[in-house]
Image (cartoon, rainbow, N blue to C red; front, side, top):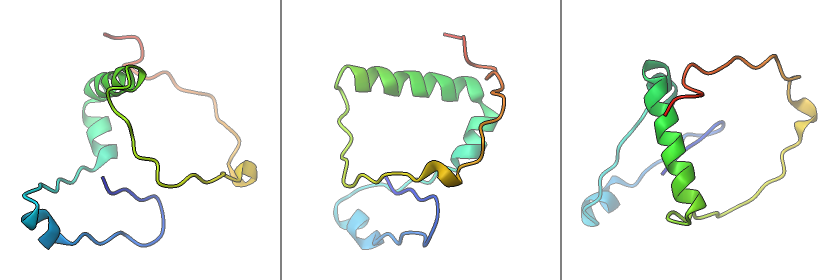
Length: 86
């Protein structure tokens, strides 16, 4: 998984994917959530279940402390249309 929130966009060595017979897929996450919020909620629930059951173990390569003094004040939360569905 390659992700970024700011700074330079990471470069991927495509020859490694070919040599190791791997796939590289791209997802515009914001668009996927807007198009199908119910599916997004289902995906998140499944990921959390896997995490709780220790079925997935994310590789944590670095931890940083966030300086929240620059964060905006929270606004009134809006209910998600998919919050209470199963």
